Image (cartoon, rainbow, N blue to C red; front, top):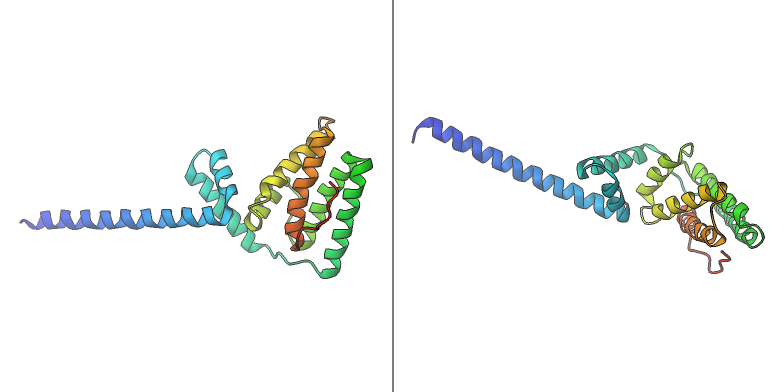
Length: 184
């Protein structure tokens, strides 16, 4: 066999090995992102123009999160926030719109104290999705209801749903078990 044929076979083998390695890498990366982000992975893929762009976005979120110094709350802060949450839930009985506003502000306060940047909602949701992917969809839904509430377009049942969604993230952010007694 001529030398040029061996060279072509060698190049072909190298290309096949490179393609297999690349395929294994992307498959491993995809599986890792799916495991890390759970339902947030599927939502991001559905919203992005391509799977590759969605996965790039999720990887960027992880890198950004690694740069943040997220710390647990001190026990005193955790207790104070738990008490504020209890008051917000009690307020729901007499003033559901105000209680939802309180819940939204309380989530931001807890996030700020833990070290999350809170200036932009979309960035807050992206940042929190890295640590709490199971409840970030609740946060988005609650925020949507909160905005509808500000426009006078939310029913009392919508507001109750928002409180339940906010509570799911609140419990995660406080890093404690969900309270046994819930009013909303």
